[in-house]
Image 1 (cartoon, rainbow over the protein chains, first blue to last red):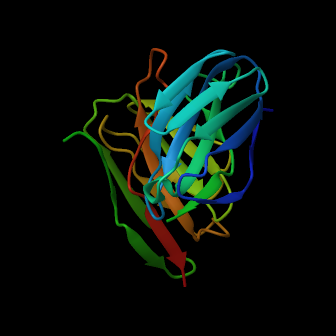
Image 2 (image 1 turned 180 degrees about the vertical axis):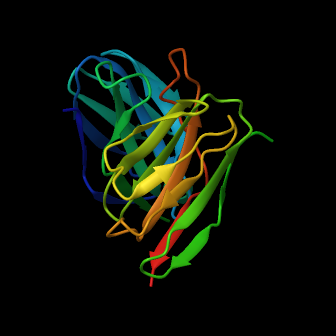
Length: 112
Length: 115
């Protein structure tokens, strides 16, 4: 069974204080690993897709990396507007083309 | 603009009542999904559909029903058989083919509360 575990559950940083969020996964035949951002009371918004170990993607202050067992979302010099819950999900080959398995998310708070 | 529209945003239900949540998309996506989100938990898949008039159960389909009569629409009915329906419900869509099938577009969500 495919599984995704995110850590920490919550993270509070000062503005400008860089850190990383972790997503550990087990999957049969990784088709893709996805990061989403979710603001309170809203639907998730797609950020990145990573397909193979060693791959990296960047967007503004965010950089996602992937190994064979985990992914990291690095946040460099964050601003208060980066506060959100960040969700990680995997898509495995055996489960079929459409099914994603989500982690429970990391709630990130950036204090000014 | 293209997107997904869910309604209502807030819904209150008495025990024993069925309620239907609407989901409409104009992204021309073939695949559509319903997820449930509870506090501190990840999204759990209720139902998904890859084509009109066809849909598959997800991990927590008991107490829910769906239909897919049009490509643009995928309504979810929460029946009285669902024992703990209070949750945040999210509809999503995606392409059916290609590498970006996991890049879901989500609606704004519907929050259901059972009184």
